[in-house]
Image (cartoon, rainbow, N blue to C red; front, top):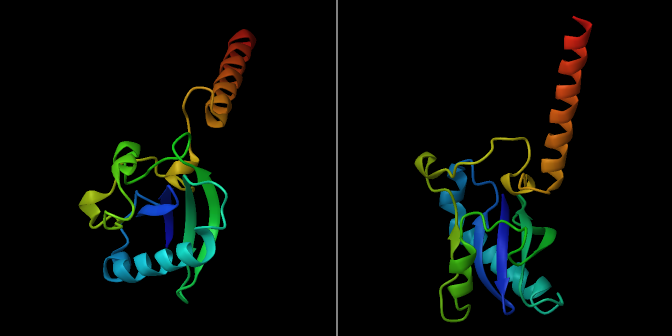
Length: 153
């Protein structure tokens, strides 16, 4: 029940499920309700309260149908568009285009990704990222251990 919301020129232009590697059947029946709750939350709590005009934010919808803010993220940059592309989000015209909530609609439409204990967008393994550095250090340690065991043998 976590969703990424995309705001361009102070207009909510897209919403999608945050965990794109899993199909949640319950979302099919509640799609319109969830979209309405998030739209209302954006209009009442965020739209003109947040300084930037272009950004993303993540929310959690509780069992009691309350929307809770998780965090804000930058527009583009290191923020993953998940079920959108940045190009298509740039082309959406908030007031003219119908707001869409994208969800994984069947097991066949699950997006490929790293199956981990954290959401897909938490893992950035591109060159220079934090995870890239962790992986490099782990590889260096592994190489050192192998050299030491070769020298002992």
